[in-house]
Amino acid sequence: MKKVLITGALGQIGSELTSKLRNEYGINNVIATDIRYIENSEVAKDGIFETLDVMDIDSMALIAKKYNVDTIIHLASLLSAVGEQNPQFAWKLNMGGLTNVLEVCKELNCKLFTPSSIAAFGASSPKDLTPQDTIQRPSTMYGVTKVAGELLCDYYFNKYGVDTRGVRFPGLISYVTPPGGGTTDYAVDIYYEALKNKKYDSFIAKGTKMDMMYMPDALAAIVDLIEADGSKLIHRNAFNITAMNFDPEEISAEIKKHIPDFEFGYNVDPVRQAIAESWPNSLDASCAVNEWGFKFEYDLAKMTKDMLEKLKSKGIGINN
Ligand code: VAH
Image 1 (spheres, rainbow, N blue to C red):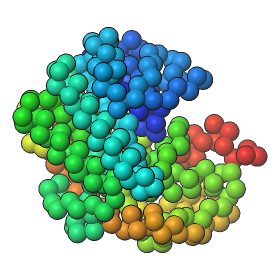
Image 2: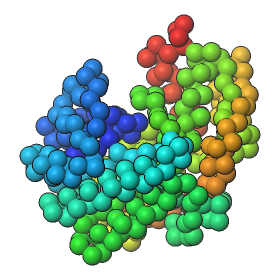
Image 3: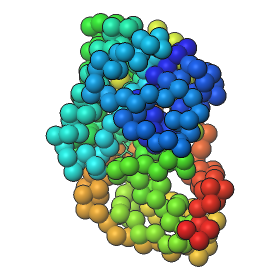
């Protein structure tokens, strides 16, 4: 990867990935794009930024040609819970955007990374150590677009030779940009609320285990897979990856080690609880380890320590 275009660069993954890639590949080799323009954001002001609606293939092709990119990282997408509020738009954006990106990559001979998710599995998938290759019948529109996206990316690789690669992300936890509209977001909200109010009521129920990953490990996985030797990849779209899995009780207990008077309770959201229950309890990530050396650094204890430290350094919890 020498010159990369990122879609959805102002999102939870994109905002941190953009600064990481600018540091590692050079400011002039990263073209951050998003449908929004947030003037004072690091993404918009610390390097090349273009507004781009991924539904507009002509503009996408124009920007990709203008900067002569060789790789596209396509992140623009609606997540699970928000997708259930407007499933028709979720399909239109998630699939329309991906189809446009695939066509541009085919025309310009670009490599493509786009993430799938544990949401690509459903209630009939094996729940524990969910295999790389198994039944995938998700019950959310987000999940349907992730399975369809995996198949479409494999199709473009097999039919047209487009170098497509992806991972099935677990819930991602970060301190930079709050996530928007996900089911796993309780595991982000809890850190903010523990610092601000020393109290949090989880919208996910006791005992609901989900796979999770700290953002630094997610960003490293994106770069490692993009840079991996394609001839060694048996799978491509998309690899199971995970770093930890826990339920609300476990993450709240870890936070209490740092904030002993933290009060934890439940206010379960039936919509997001039903989504969470349809997803795996844990993933088998052995194919990612064997085919491109996937590894992670943060477990729940190490992530919790870092999240609380970083949020405090952002001023979270001091009377706000
Ligand atoms: C969501 N955070 O909750 C996303 C993710 C595995 C979940 O895809 O929708």
